[in-house]
Amino acid sequence: MRRLLLVLTLAAALGFSALGAAQANDGKLHMLWLGQAAWRITTPGGKIIVIDPWLTTNPKTPPDYKNLDKIGKMDVILVTHAHGDHVGDAPALAKKYEAPLWGPAGLGQQLLTLGILPANLAPRMNKSGTIQPVGPNIKIMMVRAEHSSEFVTKDAAGVEHMYPAGEPVGFIITLENGMKVYHMGDTGLFGDMKLIGDLYKPDIVLMPIGGHFVMDPVQAAYATNTWL
Image 1 (cartoon, helix red, strand yellow):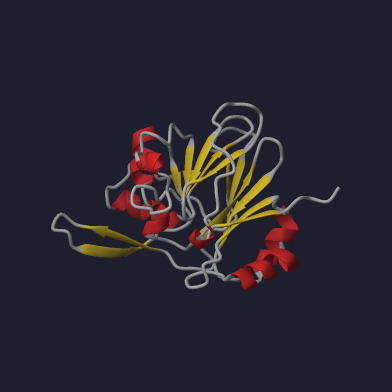
Image 2 (image 1 turned 90 degrees about the horizontal axis):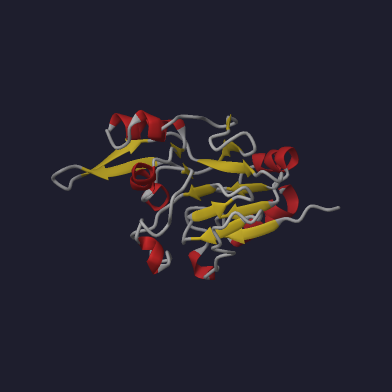
């Protein structure tokens, strides 16, 4: 049987709605879109994976989820790069729910160096690496993205400081039932998307198509039809 490729765009202009908000362990995959690149995934086995959780100041986040108490307990947080509209509330959520924040190695190191997160909540990995942070039946692989990744924070006087924070990445999440979700983060078009498609054969692809900092719809369509 042919694999079903479901392409979900992250462009706010589309007004894309959530696929589902169910939290019960019903053996199904549920994906809740929280605005921009932020997603809350409930796996078929009931694990909660949160990706790029920019919530409290995100204009597309549903009001209830701007309250970090409402998003609920999570098992792991994935951050694709250090820009504020992706790392967002991830450190606060990591501390609140004791959920490790996995992202580019340089981002984890900066969060640790700046004292924003302790070592147990800022583990490190790198592209092509695979982790199993929520048991043996879920695998998370880090893959390339074509973008930038700088971390900006304010000191006590309100002055902004910018720090290098590793390279941008995407994630391929292999679920308990074998389904693969590919979250691209922010990325331009790059030829290794074909390698990712050939090697990992993702079933669901979450793609940015804003066209200013990332791919536009034409480029994303080319990647989907030709490479993925």
